[in-house]
Length: 371
View 1 (tube, one colour):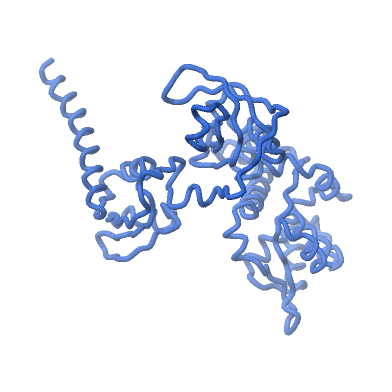
View 2 (view 1 turned 90 degrees about the horizontal axis):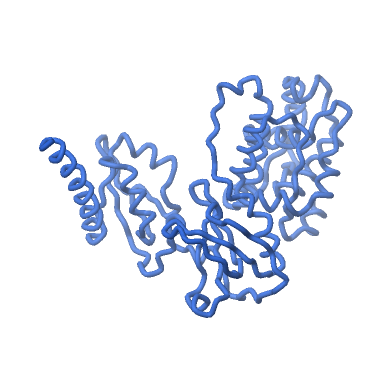
């Protein structure tokens, strides 16, 4: 049955998830704000997920069980059904001490593929163990990975309400409220009418835009869109921060989406949200103090990152990207623990920024001495 499902579902389908768990407001907010592309999931396939989310006789949510199955198999790498059932019974919070029927498990595997795009298959010999067939694809697929991670985090938090005073969540800007109309407009290629106030200008402007893509960076949503006004249209797509939108509505006017548009290619070699097409993609080398290198090693600054030298005092990381404003800000964020080695122009640019910062601080100190 799962093979038939895979044949009939060449395109990954997203779903709207409606949870009946008693989530606290702050946990629900965390869940909604941290789901990359989950906004689309919360919009589209409501009816299908309402069926999949039907409660069993114990009143437990099926999705929490799906996540449990995925995490258990993923941790074990390969596991027989008997071993899985033992772990199921050991976790009384999820199983209530009731065995997991094999037929039910197979149905859940089909539902897991339908909801998350995760393929659970059997090795077909030996111990007949189950494993996740497309584990690598999930890590590389933004939608699949974020959907699964979102539910995993939601499950963990919703089962930890007794620790609510010990779990601190970050407040995220409310720009996600505009995701629904933007995504709806993107699906139907409809023009949006928007009132917008940029970070650099306090004046509010109203104009029509053609929404191309959306992007999440540093917990803020951005829209890549083309303004229909003749003087701006020829400039190409512009990036808008959703939390700076003051008003937004979908018009009846349609536009033709460029056939050659590719969001990944548009941001090729970029770090952050500033495209920086005026800067070529080029090799960059950063020297990072050993105490900070561990952090950089685990949380890569950019997908092109490679560690080319390492000793007890420092590491050298190489990149291939456009070292635009956002990337320069990332270097400054790391302070004295990070130094630009190459290219020379970037090294001088960063030195100039640091010198100007020093002049401001030293001027302030001199002023205080005079007082």
